[in-house]
Structures are given as C-alpha cells and as structure tokens.
Length: 319
Image (cartoon, rainbow, N blue to C red; front, side, top):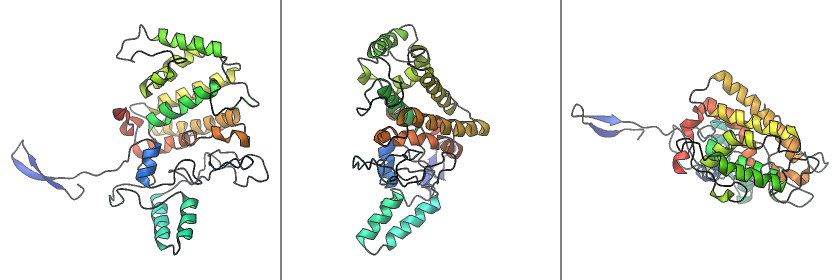
C-alpha cells in the first residue's frame, strides 16, 4: 500500500495511485506483545515503552517479575528504584540496535541473555513496514488498560479478592455488607438513565461477570464517585480513586492540549506513587499489586503526545 495501488475514481472516471501508511498497532497487552515479538508481561524487561527491569519476590522464590517504581528495602533486592518522571524510554533506534545485536549473537545462550535483558525476542511482525515506529507505534490502549485491567484490579483490592492479599499496613477494604449494598445501588442507579448513555448494569457485587468494558467505564467514572462516597474506612482511598477518574476523563477528551498532556503526565506519576504507597506498601510480599497495566499508566501521556487523543487508537470497536 505504501508503494500505491492503482485505483479507479468514479467521480471523474480516472485512475490514480492510492497510498496508505500503517502507523499504529492496536490491541490489548498480550496482542501487542505478540505483534512486537516481546518477552512481555511478567518478564525481566516487560514494558514495551521503557526498559524498566522487573522485580520478583526472592524470599518466596517467585519467578514472576513485577514493575514497581520503588524497590523493596531489602539487601537482596538490588534493582535501583525508578523515577516515574524520568523512565528509560525506548526509541525506534534502540529497537533496531538490539535486533542487530541479536542477529550477531554467536551462541543460543548469548542470544537468550540479550533477549532477556532487553525484553525483545526478535523482529516484530510488519517489520518491513517502514512507517511504524517500534517504540511509539503501539500506544497503551485506553479500553484494555483502564476498563479491563486497572479498574477490576482496584475492585479486587477493595473487596479482598486480589491474590489472597490482606490490607497489610493499610485499611482499604470495603466491608462485604457494604459492597452488597453498593451492588444493589448500582443496579438501581441506571434505571432512569437513557440507554443512549449506558446499557443496563447488573449488580456489581453478585453479577460482576456480566460487566463489559463499557459497563466498567460508566460505573467507575460516573457512578463510583457517588456510590463509594464515605464507604471506605479512610477517605484517602476515595480521594485516590477520584484522582484516577479525573485523569481518565481528561485523557478521553475529543481535543486535548499540550498543557493538559503535561498535567496528565505529572498526574499519573503521582497517582502511581500513591497506589504503591497504599496497596504495594513497598513490601516484597505484595509485589503482585504492581502489575504491568499499573505501570502502563506512566506512558499514557507520552502516547497521547505521540499518537493523538485516546479515541484515535482505542479499540472499543472490537468489544
């Protein structure tokens, strides 16, 4: 298509060359990892946008790598803590250089070590499409990042269902009877809202499996601020939730300014730092809370800056 395909113009009965240039790869986290031929989530270098190194639970002999900013304060944990405002971002040239190094490896072992260090297994699909920037052409997709990963993770934490973790030194769990009331209120809340805004929502406490990405988005951004007010044991968790809602709403504006993107960049950095303080607590045993989607928040502003507003590259059309 980049070279041009001879096409008929019915308006003036002439032929012309139609050119098309693929500049984005869209999909969920797993799909992009396959398309980009990356080691992927839970790997030592899991992020497609930066070269942050993973941290595993050494004490429990864990094999899964997570992406906290702050490394657990233990002698055996040697990875330096990371500044969310100064992450080691990947570039297209970095990708090309690493691919050349992989091709020049003499032994299989040498290639495996290099691949693990950088999180790249080999050439991406569509590698011959010169219009694609390997570092910036696969933005973190809004629907999958927030609606199908981060929000369900938060709900799991609030309801005590996240990887058998307790609240540690914090107190963020919502009591079961309160969550049941929230579920009933969720079902009642949309009865008088026109279907043009949202489809019927079920009881989030007992029928959560029916929630689509659209349902998660409407519930979190428009109902949760009301339904969860004064429901947490401590107000700071509610404030933290509302900060994320504000960031999400800004990120899906039809038009977004450079100044707003700069504010989003700082806002997401602060939000992730607070998330780690509340839920991860810089505790090695709680590394599981530092999932790759939580880290992905830190790249949303950069993707908006490079690729345009979220609606340009989100994938609601596949839901």
